[in-house]
Image 1 (cartoon, helix red, strand yellow):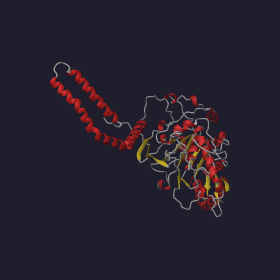
Image 2 (tube, helix red, strand yellow):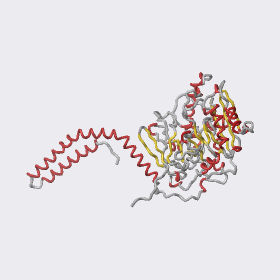
Image 3 (cartoon, one colour):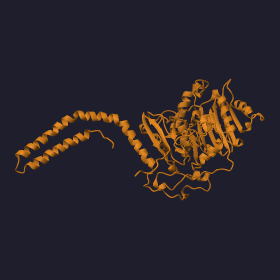
Image 4 (spheres, one colour):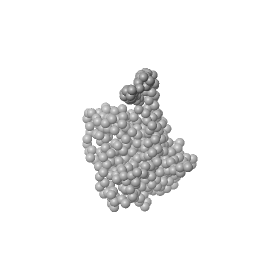
Length: 499
């Protein structure tokens, strides 16, 4: 009889250390705690205002042409452009194109009856690029431009919005069933846009990989985006990406960027992941339906980068080392040397969940880098250890007031079973070479072991022929004991295998 059970549709293919994997995802259980004792708890449900407004923050580094295009696609493709507001930290040098001027040039061509339409909705913080000290500082400056908007988005200056993005991304955000949800990922390339500037027909992007760490003091760095097949539902994640972030604005205000992280680039995203998660927020990657912003990933050899800055180069090595030790301090990673500890209570981890919980949730070890795991399997919501801050933020909601029926502790989802099989297959694949080498060594010694076993066998046969007085039985037992000991020695020298 053929089983009618359907496999979970969403899945994630990836390779780690040249070993192929496929993680099967089951987002229907992602907001359910994994502990049976807490399975009745849920995150706070989303609260949607009647006419939601958007703040979009961009930290642009000498990228005026593409920055202006990004703003133009946002206003031109929004269903309600009057509700869209920008805050741009425009870092430029002599002779650079200016983001606002590039936007106005396009806006005047699109809406010729207006003088730079929607310009009043754009705040600009113009800065000298020669004084830039990295993206974290610029993102903090960008946060200072947030007003009283409902939703806050952060993205790179070289992006493109699709039609009705402002409506569709909120629809997808609501589907997380979590007021504390933060959409974040690396948006897919323009090539994934369907004909007619439509959403992707199959995939969405998801963050769940790291560059391999050699030491426990190495900062975790995201390894790029993975693709979710058959993406229909937002997918819980452990990681935040700087190319796109979308949430209620209270996330930006309660968990601000750290203005002391000078020169930090590698590792800034893992830091932000920790800040948000320990403040009670949960990262999700949008489904293909909410994947309404795409990224220009073309490699421009002339692209300007903040580390090209020579004005403050003399101070960079020490400032960077101190800042990275600050980051390690926040993540409880080992470090040596100076460290900047200013205002850690303001810019460090929250108290809603612990750092230890986050390290476990995201698969990072602070004692042995070889124990790191990629958070590719289905993530499950972790209840708040200290819920009072979230309860104060959301009057009327309390963590322990949920009447949701607990899930049976013995109920094992099919995705969990499939993932365990995938892990086992990968382990067997990765260890096959070592296993084969051990088997060859065993075969080389097998003849000598078999010859050793022949001696007691011959002795038993001889005594069976000559002994008829009952003493044969005791000798036979002794011989078989010897044979058993030799066989045990063989087994102990064999490599372990997995069934």
